[in-house]
Amino acid sequence: MLQPKIVDVEPLLDYKLKLCYETGEKRIFDVSAHIRGSWYGNLKEPEYFRTVHILPGGAGIEWGEGQDIAPHELYESSVRII
Image 1 (cartoon, rainbow, N blue to C red):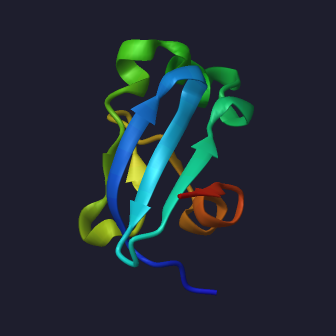
Image 2: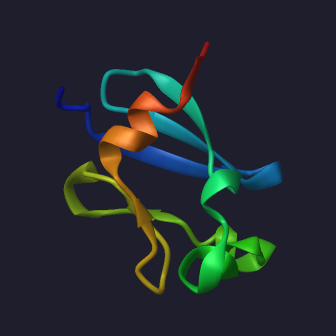
Image 3: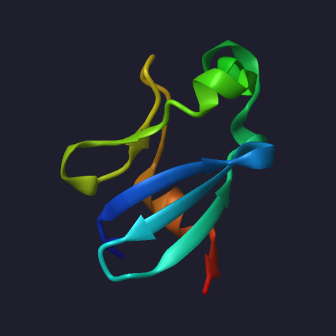
């Protein structure tokens, strides 16, 4: 399944992201399960976690050192909010 493009990402408390899609849908994704090991471990730092940004074209999200989460996982493992 192709996911709609992400138009906004907002870092929240407790290592969660609020994702807004081009369809108007809003979802919450919990990043905490990914924060382990040397590659994703630095996401534990709140200042760094808040640097999350959208990839060109809205295809996904990424942090400054290249950490990312697959777009299908962001969509399928997130919870829809109203």
